[in-house]
Image (cartoon, rainbow, N blue to C red; front, side, top):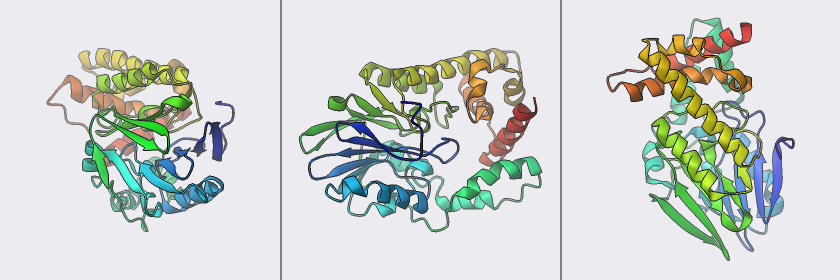
Length: 316
């Protein structure tokens, strides 16, 4: 299914759909739709109101007779929830930990980040990717129902299982499993052909989250970013995480900084994925696990480091 990676609505079968946004880089995320006999469940909204409205309009062939009654947010990153206000009348479900993170980085903070005077053309070019989105007209709309561990929802006669798998990519990650359709919507636990990023960790928790998905044995895996895949896509994410843990731990023990380690590590096949520069942020997260006294960079400094590493990779 990875060959059918085009923008818009894709039918997965058994009343399931996904909305894909290539190329899957910063802000270009996926959503899911589970249609019942008379109502539907939406998995995630998108990064801004324009993108979300385009998606909702594109789903009308399904939702005009089966309106969205439930919205599930897989985590609190804006590209998976900042369009929530447009799904009017729906119950919004997320984990307790997701709800706690919901306003830690509101749209206004992202808008402020984009207004930063970087004084550095490399960083300014990197941050220009975010100008494709608009953040100044968003009303943050948090979950109206929360849970921890797991929750089963019944959509007409179909059971949908929500499984908490964070902390991993964020503190409050969940996945949405539709057993009778052998399908799982993973949020940002899975990136396909793109570099995973963990803001929260611990890294072992992220790896365990991959194992939870693999144990479900689903035939169809809808990632948070990238084309629809199967368990091979999950295994590739897990392999990357284990690779960073091994290589990063060695360089931490050798006294190498995270920035120097990121330049030193040969990414091999992983270097072909989009956003390979995220390894430096991942290494900071790993270093923080290895040393409780480690102080990582601010968000602004993280973006600066990734911008320069991306430039380094491009010119290597």
